Image (cartoon, rainbow, N blue to C red):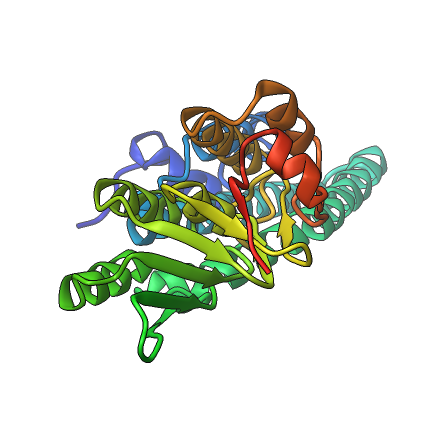
Length: 299
């Protein structure tokens, strides 16, 4: 169907073709809308908590937000560039303004490119596995220790780890102790495992190392055992690999509330919350005994 005139064409199409006045295309659409307002809207959307219990759905939403932001920027940039073309045919002063406008467009795109490309590339790299329904952390390994009533958990607590632990405990109802060695993982998986261990009144033990989300599982034990050489690592939370500080804040609040429910003192929780996600705080065993995290010392 033939369009009758520019006035009836879609605003989106008119801008893309460079048919809007350059003041509108560059000032209102490119600078105000695409560079300032639209990214702010998307940033607000990304402040919505990243729900780990719907991790794969949240990942797809986040990826869609990033892609839409770039589509809008490209649309706004192309339209502003094309809208400035007629200026070449008018007096010399307009040509100067044309050059200035295009130089500014390029400069803004370069700056945004450096900022957004780095952060968005990191975010999409993190989301890549989740987009196809796979957690790059993998799932925890579960094995019954021979001639004992102990279940050994080893590795990251990635999405699906709860189901692994649940099936192991259902298959071996004689289990009384869960030993865990882990660098951490998904908070929601740790919480679900912890709730299961609490319901079954199972003891927990760490002989070597337990960091981050692993400490949540350890806290669920009726009796919580460690050796004098055991290392427990604590830090503020993050959605693993995600660069968004907003998500990190939300994750830390959730982590703090979980520790609080296990009776960890506020002073200790506050200290942990101040440790950056890429750092680790290793309290002494005596301190962990004092705050009630470790209830039994074994050799």
